[in-house]
Image (cartoon, rainbow, N blue to C red):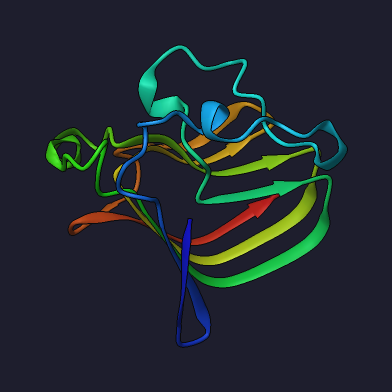
Length: 138
């Protein structure tokens, strides 16, 4: 995963070669770090590293985040249907999460909390991608 600092925000680009190999093949999940196992995945766009994953945390404040997935195995045709990747941000066993200014491109779900999509593709369209001014949980 590539990280770029943009002003006071955070921009994360997914590696262009994903899903070749799948995230669970390149590196084995380490239970000591509660790594995702991708056991819930049934399609290739699911087996990718997350743009943002927050696990077992409280009072997280993020001011300005851009999560982008432009390719699927170096092919950008997935942008036409926003199906380059399934999940951009995943929050698990966490509370008091505050995202101010979230912008995503190429994902089916902007935010997933404990396995439930709370901001699906198309619900927050804004020009080329999708944006949410404020996401807070709970």
